[in-house]
Image 1 (cartoon, rainbow, N blue to C red):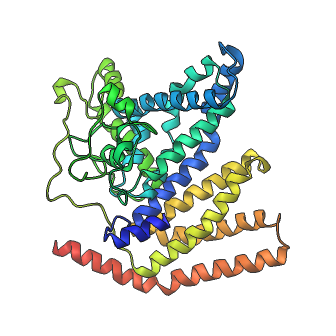
Image 2: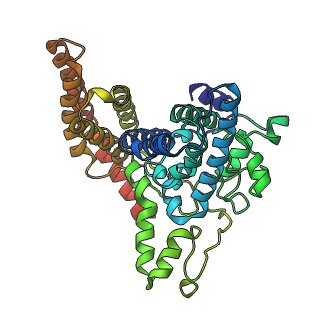
Length: 400
């Protein structure tokens, strides 16, 4: 991401915004933390079916690995495609498309619920006889491949465009222009899109995002907004058969008596990306707190086995709460100041509990005291700056 940022600077491409990039990574954090509790649904079910019902015991070698890699991407294509074509499944996948920028940080913008709707697409591989460890390895490589294609810094790539998924192909996939909607679903390979009629060449530059922007930096709300919208629309549908159709038809579908399928419209020329302005001192504050949070998150994810379920739930809640608090700062919510004061205190307690495993207690207390005091001083010192900034925003709204 650092290399991409430098390249884009030379290309005079302003596709990184701090609030958007941190929200992208926040969503990745929330996805990883919540994934701790639903891994059993994906890997656990796969392992159970493999052990009990596999038709064959496929030997592990380079050829079977390559075959599994290809078959996994085939399953991924259909899981991904149906995540766009089924309204309920779209609720899990829409998170990844909700950024209005396109850079490597968008690759980290992952959903916390998508696994619920897509894990069963890979279960045929368990019946065939590919063991769970090989599946996890292939899954990781497939996901890793898809990271680097989330960039505008790389143009078209010659002959690779014919069979591999590339930045050009994937930019199309993230476009909200009518011609680009629901195209190029492949993970590593683009051949499945060409075989099954969902391929679209990149022509004009895409407008990124979703047709109904979520307009929030809050990672929890970004995960829930589509489901909340579904709930409101289902209230308008009087009979149960149409409610079920609403769940499993394409996003935008309604019964004919409510208007029928809502088609995607061209992007209006007056369209502007969602953005919020924050005083620079608060941007620096969020960045500082974010680096500290990443340290706790990394330790938590790499040492899951050392925590009991109570601590797993508590630390997960603290990490997710922190990402929500940062969004409150970006959106200048009224509650962010008090919430941040409480969060820093609880974060210090959690860090003290974990730090006892590595340092002497007096060193931990000193370090956390400095962290808390500097955080509170930062918030207090800039309180007047923030108030003046919020007044200017209110004045702008009044004039508008």
